[in-house]
Image 1: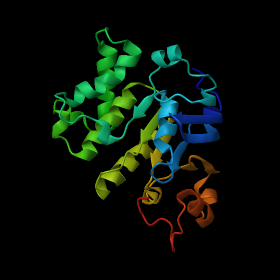
Image 2: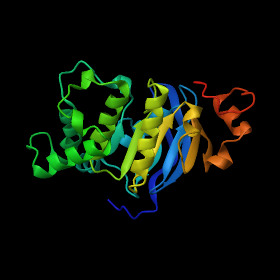
Image 3: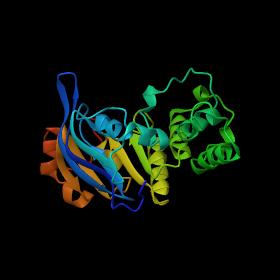
Length: 255
């Protein structure tokens, strides 16, 4: 993978359908390598679909997608597992698996399913857990953790892939305010390591306590893309959320 490519992700005239329903329409984006990007928009706007299409979980119906300048073929994805953090509600909290084992799953892509983890894999898992401050709970069953702790473990699993691209789908949804803030502080730390980070959220309040280099305002198509100070203006927010928000638009309303 060409980590020196100027763009981590490029969409060109990208469409995505579920059956007859159009989810994403004519997406054109160039996300600079090393940037921290927030995707905002109402529920049903296609934020998760955009993240999943980059992760290779949802195929486009037409148009092109490139990651670090390459079309992500199946073989390419198999060799390189992207750092994808799904929504917390998608995790089976009753599954009898420890924190350490969850994070080791991040190594199955690079390893292949049938290879035994080596010293390097164990080191990466411990390193990833340390990064998210969860190493002390490595033997704890995942179901016994709080939501904020579970989210940190999923982020550690993504870090264990060693991917230069981290994709987070609503990482703070369902968490209390202190946990939300601590997740976004963690994302800031990870961005400081030079990773490209793309985070979907429908909570405008998140933008108050988190720094994004760029914001994608999405409602099936890209309404606006640029630095926060340029795109987070009332007119764009209203067009994105299809509502008239009185006063400050950072009111934390979940739309």
